[in-house]
Amino acid sequence: MAIDAQRICDRCEALARHSEQPDGLTRVFLSPEQRAVSDLVRGWMGAAGMDTRIDAIGNVIGRYEGERPGLPCLMLGSHLDTVRDAGKYDGMLGVVAAIECVADLSARAVRLPFALEVIGFADEEGVRFSATLLGSRAVAGTFDPAWLDKCDAAGVAMRAAMQVSGLDPARVADAARRPDDVLAYVELHIEQGPVLEAEGLPVGVVTAISGGNRFNVEVVGMAGHAGTVPMGLRRDALAAAAECALAVERLARSMPEVVGTVGRIEALPGAINVIPGRVRFTLDARAPGDELREQAVAAMRDAFEAIAAHRDVTVTLAPIWEARTAACAPALQRQLTQAIHAEGVRVHHLPSGAGHDGMAIVAIAPIGMLFVRCTGGISHHPAEAVTVGDVGIAARVLARFIAQFVPPHR
Ligand SMILES: [Zn+2]
Image (cartoon, rainbow, N blue to C red; front, side, top):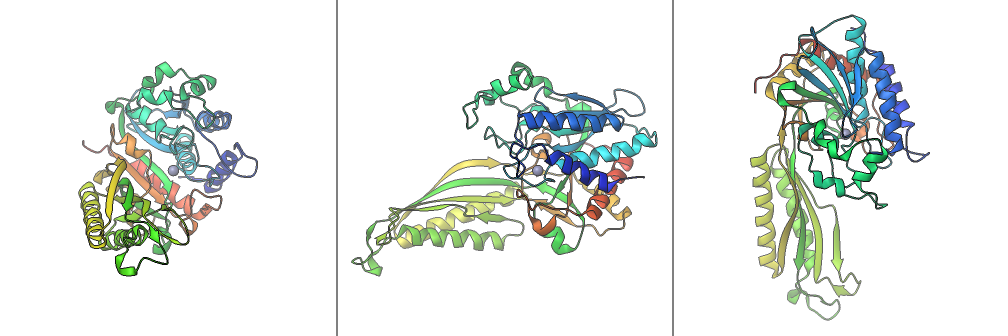
């Protein structure tokens, strides 16, 4: 096996040069920069012995046939779009590392009892049209045609942007794959968190992509003069909201692998000498199992109601988003575990608190994920970093996994 980790890192650097801004990395769906990286990636795929194409939503796909043409595939890859002012590895590393694994097989003229496909999803982050996973949803056949009318910040509809990119919006459904054609989808991705670094490990096996709930929460009390209303007679909405935020933290801490965050808060009327009468805040709760997540959210709701009753205020939760957990297939976790063992690395399992393309692809195929340590757990930031050594280990683990791959039963 000959995996060139330096080449993987150099290619991530090369992709990062295609950005809408000169002093940082931003590359969104259906942009000229995206078309440029699609060409670059297709070139690398072709050099690695793959047949390449752009599908109906703009995903780049390279296919390396198995022992005979037309076999179902093991799909590998990640996304090629970025957030604003992004790092160079979130997404791209998974695409480039998978190409490197195929290049190694191709150089040794190895054919497997299944085909390999490497996919570079055109949209995962959802920056441009405020809808995420557009590339993988098209592949999973769950792309809602109504999204074609979504507009970007400049008022350009997705439908029009597709035409500019040479794609036919009427044909998005053509990107959908049949479950029979995809044996599994496995993605290598940076962890985007600090767990592997704390464990001193270069890679880890993902157990599930956590589901989540988001709410807008409103607390209504009574505004009043900060000087004249005695403490015992107040109905302070901000003090109540603060207690709610602490309850979220306490409850999430008490339930293993649950995370809960109050990320935004606004107090009204928002004056130094007025008791806040109305407060709005957000709640984001995630867990790697749906039952656990529902329990956590119910416990948070109960805590809010108790706080509201005690303080004579009202608290209402308006749901704004919900996603179910996408479990990684146990058989794929076992096979990744064996590949990590074979590389001489201790195996650590962890959930993914961030969303990934597997959340969409799980609708048509079993999914697996391999996380790679990233410096300081930093992501969605220019300081995102990986080491060449870790990239080498991760890519070799992926190559071993591919060589030993057995399709999971469904
Ligand atoms: Zn990503």
